[in-house]
Image (cartoon, rainbow, N blue to C red):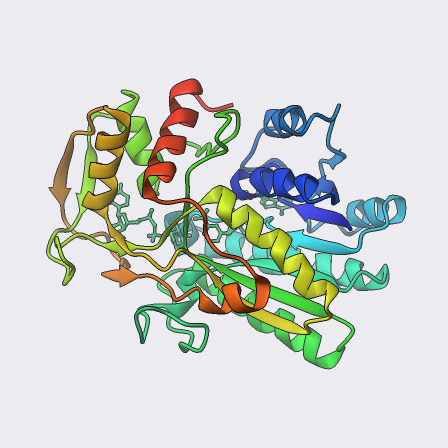
Length: 337
Ligand code: NAD
Ligand code: UFG
């Protein structure tokens, strides 16, 4: 298939492009580069062994820009990564998050249907479960109260896409609820490249290890978890990327609506991650215990059985691979791209 990849220059998008080409698909990328660097796409092409990946610097809110891309390229499906994703920033700038993520997706979907492309895989998030009603989380777990506007954009967009599919069954909509993506391509050429101070655990750990930050703050050690620190379902970004290729099979089978948790099913604490990073990479990661971070929950991990049964997808990488590949990327690219 030929796939339109929105946000394809970003962290998960770049890794997914590699999996798409590996599986025999082709791609057209659009990205406004608000949180990425075109060097990432140059490196993707280098890894795949192509001169370049078709790329347009287009914003998903730009109807004419999208029309031009769809007129030039016949796309069978869209993998929709484009969006703003910083939780804290979304609390400061709710309007910008709702406008970019929701309005952007509405424009994208409208242009898609005008061009007869009614297949979409959407990047959702475990955040839509709020403080989850059950652990491990299955897809039947009710959606919860999000603690920030970013989370609400994901929750609302799930509803928007499901309603559109219900009204027009020609649509196939796959909602992939990602748990915590970490790691990097084993080549060490592409990886996560956050602007400024990282919000997420793994890039913070790697920046401490490489000497860019003094120490990691561990946000709370009094949660009801085995060691008191927060537990999450970390998933290697290459596994996550592969899930999108499996989701295309569901689209091929005319799945209608498909909703899947994409995680490993294992919960690791903050200290598990820090200790694995030190053990595998033989580098020090100084840390100190800080107060809990507002909005955090104690434990979040999934039951990924539905994705295994229906998509034939299972995570292949473990925690040692995740910390090794995260470090390989950071050590080779201390200042990102
Ligand atoms: P990322 O920021 O690296 O990639 C997103 C890309 O979208 C960036 O390249 C950015 O420039 C682009 N973009 C943003 N707004 C755009 C717009 N209006 N028009 C065109 N391009 C635009 O983020 P990522 O980690 O690769 O995440 C990809 C998707 O997965 C996002 O939708 C994110 O919310 C979702 N997600 C990420 C995580 C995570 O922890 N990384 C977890 C759950 C869900
Ligand atoms: N943590 C620290 N110190 C840090 C950063 C994080 O102790 O400097 C802890 C957090 O308190 C939490 C765990 O590490 O217990 C993971 O935190 P992250 O910020 O890496 O990830 P979250 O689970 O909070 O959120 C992530 C994404 C969201 C997404 C969510 C669920 O940032 O976008 O996973 O998919 F919605």
